[in-house]
Length: 429
Ligand code: PMP
Ligand code: GLN
Image (tube, rainbow, N blue to C red; front, side):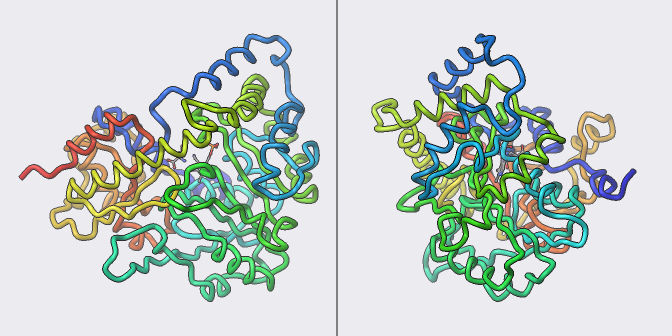
């Protein structure tokens, strides 16, 4: 096997924990996907587009005209500029392919890519497949005296960021709202990052904003591309999956200046060529309709935000009542739990899991057999029937201990499911 492939001969956390959840009949608060139906206007748009023969053939390689036009109109206010639909937008197979394409288009062997740790794990694959070397800068938890933990207490040390940057740095991957912590980067934080980057003009930024609509309390989502002088070096990435609760559709898009989008468009021709046509049309139509009143709210986005805010509030409280230590998220649909004070964690694989693994019903990354957060999540799935994701999956190899004191829950579930999860999580002594 080629060297780059040899690095991926163990299953990812998703390949263990989603099947494990099913085997245990557990409530799956692991992999993040909503368990409710997408809104009716989204489903109708899909059925209309898929029964229209007009949308049955290959789309324009970098995106169906109707979709890129809608994206250019929809994102002009957020990005505070006009966006050229044919030159500054590239539609991809989910945000995942946008990330992959950006790496294919801009990085190679000898280049370094900076990750802010913890980081969504797919970045690692995209960077390694492009032949580049990941460099990691951790977020540090700096709790405020006498206050409950919040994702806003996770801070980047800008000197540390500077220390990993060099002329080899080609790309910095930023994610706000952030998976897996729920942190929302403030404008001042983005400005501070941009300031450090001024001294490294070769380094581009990929700003993953798939959770752009999921921000709580008074937080606002700020794209890196709107910070002074950053448009020219930033690729902004979005996904219909999160916005319209259709994670299975895998339609995403990248927006940026022509000199960054064009190499991605040209790479796209040789990778997937184009993305599924009827679903692109359905997303175009959904983006058009999302600004209309929905369920007594002024827009679909307002409704979505309100729904998630309520779930965030409810589940955060539920976890406290269950005796756990959640870190309050400011955005996304994830919530991190500090497990470091839980006394009786058995740091070994549950026998049932060993058995499923032996019988080939489950695939396990053997390097995680003694990882305390993995084993905590495994016992929770087997004994309590609630699945979470071990946090060290989002850390580099040598920073695993930083991650292993947390686990991640997703709260993109119906209220009754969250309530049932709470009941199951309450300790029974
Ligand atoms: N970025 C982040 C931060 C995510 O959580 C996800 C969800 N899987 C993605 C990108 C990928 O999005 P998509 O499903 O559109 O490929
Ligand atoms: N982004 C989702 C999560 O973090 C899904 C991950 C995946 O499917 N690889 O849970």
